[in-house]
Length: 75
Image (cartoon, rainbow, N blue to C red; front, side, top):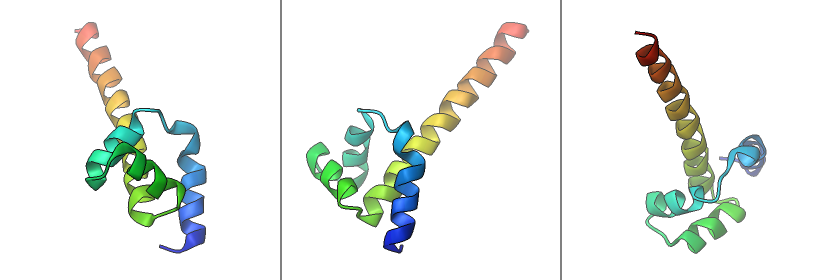
């Protein structure tokens, strides 16, 4: 992944990162939370792509739950 692409991904997901995401990132990378945060801040592709997955999956999970919950309460 090119440096410019990494920066574009970081810009796109910056608004959606939550505090606990760095804990999950650390677990995904088999690193401490601090080491994972440093890798992300240093634009390491593995950390940036993993954070992107965390953000995207959280949004999908929340939307899916809301959708399923709405269908359950309407029945």
